[in-house]
Length: 127
Image (cartoon, rainbow, N blue to C red; front, side, top):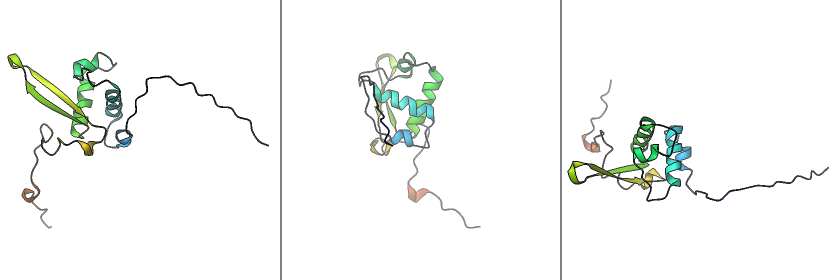
């Protein structure tokens, strides 16, 4: 006997189209996946600073800051620093859906990490 099923989908407007790459990245925490998804949904002129993001989410400064640092380590975000007047820092956030497309990662190692050329890496001694 054939079933007569009917499906009615009620959708809203205001969709965000984004890659699934970060959602399937097993190296990222759920917190970082959620923050990156949220950041990708915002307009480019948004205040992407930690302070700006904490104004529109439930999480506090430390949670947002640690998620951004994780996304930087995994090359989803590159944070460019420059000095403004009176010695204050200004950050420009470059956000990538795919970390492989982050053209800054080879030029600028993540903060606190030092890139060592392959020829300088000592080989593992035999035991």
